[in-house]
Length: 304
Image 1 (cartoon, rainbow, N blue to C red):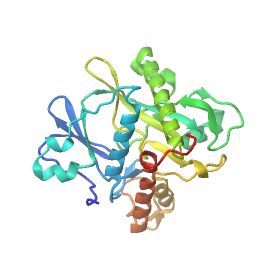
Image 2: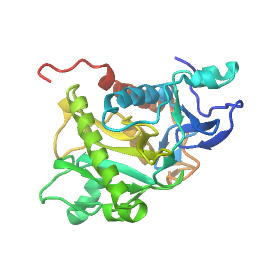
Image 3: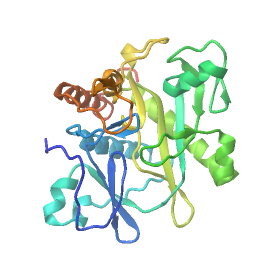
């Protein structure tokens, strides 16, 4: 495995932005080099230590899922090798962890789809039997499967800020009724396809989020990353039990550790600076991410 990469340093291309995980570089006027680092964040705070192999895993999974979903909506991939646009001495930083993509006009909506009641959705349901303005039947429990997938969008926030859950009506105000409906309908179709593919491999996708952009012709395009452990809640189907929190293939292990972490003798306030992660926490978090590779690499279950 290549050395862990916390922050890329590509000097042959102009840096556009650094997100929680990805570093984006301009390639001419119409393309972007997206480098998935090994950074990890929790509670919207970026940890100082990277998780080895995380960037390669996220890229491998995203590329696989883009291939599975291409007949539903176009994606931003150019099909060109990322290594072809950087200097020879920078190839090691991008190999296996990068995508060369079309530059689009981002839509400022996190398109969240939920098939199960979990996380912030479960908390909101307990307050009023609805999630993001979507009414749900009474009697649901933590991790309940919903009668049908629901679209619960969020307004995309700046790095370090919390995304804000919003109603569908608010998305209509933001982007207009036609585009809002298109994003909603495509997102639900994407989730339904992905959930079916994953379940055939023994994995439940409880919820996920998609990001979209518009090309020069105004066509909706799936962008950023898709269906990785950073944007999705994965549960092993054989360990799923309604009413409990199933084990997840993501950074929940890290979140749980941080809940009990202390800085200068006090509970961590979930603001920078982040606590230093013990080697065991780094190793266990990396192992959880690797479990998510069961989806693209697993054999289909008999009868699926």
